[in-house]
Image (tube, rainbow, N blue to C red):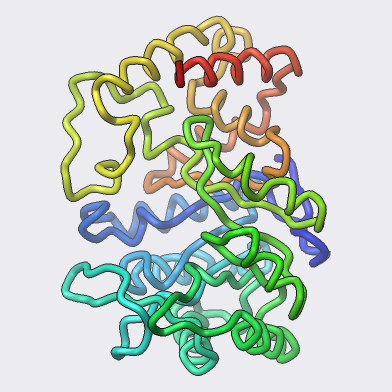
Amino acid sequence: MIYRELGKSEIKASAIGLGTWAIGGGEWWGDSDEEKSIQTIQKAVEAGITLIDTAPAYGFGKSEEVVGKAIKGIRDKVILSTKCGLWWNDERGSKFFEQSGYQVNRCLDPDTIKQEIEMSLKRLGTDYIDVYFTHWQSMDPYFTPIEKTMECLMDLKRQGLIKAIGASNVSKENIEEYLKYGQLDVIQEKYSMLDRKLETTLVDTCLENNLSIMAYSPLEQGLLTGKIGMDYVVNPKEARAGIPWYQPEKRIKVINMLNSWKDLTEKYDCTLSQLVVAWTMWQPGMSHVLCGARKPEQIMETVKASEVKLTEEEIARMRKDVLSLDD
């Protein structure tokens, strides 16, 4: 496993991290087997994955609770990240989405953040969080200036409740504001070879300011594993429904591209998932790649991506193939 620093925090975490959104279950993911989820997290740690990412909104606390059970007794082996900013405990915040009977709002007021950290610490069974992210940024009509949010986060850091501050789903202007009022070490954003807008919006800013990037959804909810064919029917309620690449006319292009990399999977004796994750790990600015899993065998497959040492020529070839999808 490869380990990389998180900004200026002096924290090192595995370049491949376990994302636990799906472990929370719910309408987007369906029922999740808690025992298998716990085994998955523990297997990940045994295999060298130290970065475990979760959030209160993943299953409305369920994901954090499962992670807490899984890391009991091995907390010192884990770099734990969770989030704040999606609030459903009262009417404060700007409306964001409804799910499972909850109205979820964006809210980054200091008061709600202080309540969120207490609830997360309890669910996770720990007395500190390694990396604490603002999950989504506040917006009108219930807008909280980043100065106020950052003041609260820096105070939590001084208290030892968090070790590093991260921000997710941000703009360049957001990043500049965070840096103005404290130490921001990492951002977490969606990035895959099919969704590369980050390269033209935030990567340069992050490189200039020594900010790490945690990329999530690198496999586009399974499409880049090569296991989803043209016969797959997308449920309109699942997370995949909003991904344009699942549309038949686009999906066939992706499938053909993946099939063209058979020589690479044979050369490295790897799966397509491992090949894609390996490529993602070596893109400029992508210091950490979060991969979801709910079964031990899934995360054990992902772990091996760190052993795939692509040449510069192969990385360039894959990028050329990816760019051709836009033609």
